[in-house]
Figure 1 (cartoon, rainbow, N blue to C red):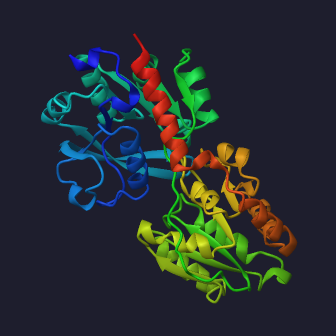
Figure 2 (figure 1 turned 135 degrees about the horizontal axis):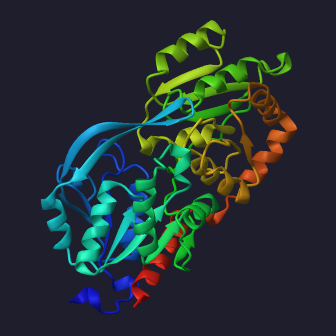
Figure 3 (figure 1 turned 180 degrees about the horizontal axis):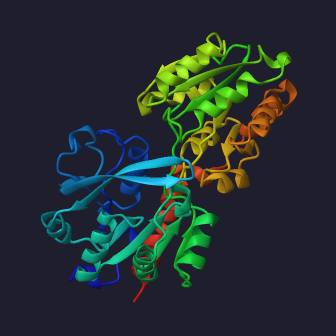
Length: 388
């Protein structure tokens, strides 16, 4: 069979196997990533749910062959906040159709039921596996029980190659899962860089425009950001405005709190905005703040860096170490420490300091580009296919 032979990565039929991508039929940042995947692997495919609107993306190798049994919603606690998700498992028919793709290798995201099914299918068909991990799962409250760790160890130690986005995730691989082999590539497989608008004038001088672009929920920390801004020194009262882009269950309570604090004139609510339209908000901003209270590896920090903007990023974001390592205008904050957050905002809004940060941020590092993501994937696929 073809998958038993040595195959060059560029010629390989690689299947990227996961349960879902994007939001409500919008691939969002995955659109650019899959385009890069297709460029590097012309024979590659991306299996998706049979109900997915593949016609929206004729340029991508989407294959509607998957079907799922939807189970209950998942709730994971991280301190005093929750991570919400959906448990769903692929049907037997979906696994059979996956086996029929004739792939040389399966790319698997994390340890979801779909990933585990893709792993089993690869073992049955003697295909290579490339496992993708973002960070230390503790940042999203992943279960750390004995059975869960046993399954993760089994899969990780048998993967032909692993891409892990940062050193936090690598430490989890090495120390918790006991992965000792040299088949680990450390670098992102996910990034986000919303397209900036063209032909628009630069923002006019005035108060610094702070941007929060994320879900308006307790977990994302927007309430703590508003409270900190309300306690800035009086001399900074007219030095800022805040654009809140997103929706969620805290939206109306937050509106009421903004009103009660007398910040109506400085805080603008834009609601949910399509991913393709978010670039203009980054373009028009002077400072991006990501005050999450728990995130596996939020992509907002990468969007800020790729847009050439200074960013304050939460210590509770699994991406914070990799961002501050290469982005000179990125600063780590603790949103739960009210006084420290207020002080960090005051320092960032200092006119001289902000100007320095903006010049530094304009030198965008290449580490989080889509091209770099493609390089990491190609390297891992090459390692996996070269194994005997």
